[in-house]
Length: 94
Image 1 (cartoon, rainbow, N blue to C red):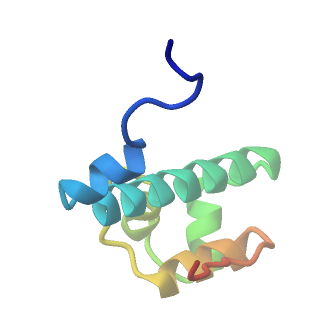
Image 2 (image 1 turned 180 degrees about the vertical axis):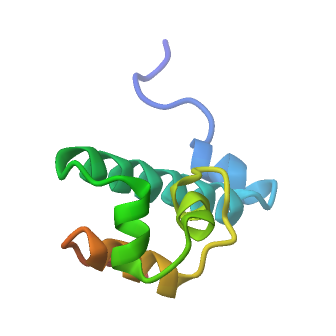
């Protein structure tokens, strides 16, 4: 008779074994931030042009921030985007 509970390893363990954990985690974090920024823009009725102006950047740069698949955005840019919608960017090591 089998015990109830998990069988096998977790998804995190699988990704770590394949050396993909950091990449997948970073991609997921960027997607969450992009979606949160988009939602805040809708809540505050901000256009991309308005937000780019608040960030003192171009629309093209803002498009990269809002693109959930674009991982080339710097922490500085993400911080400016957060401040532009009245929020703080918080990252932590766990």
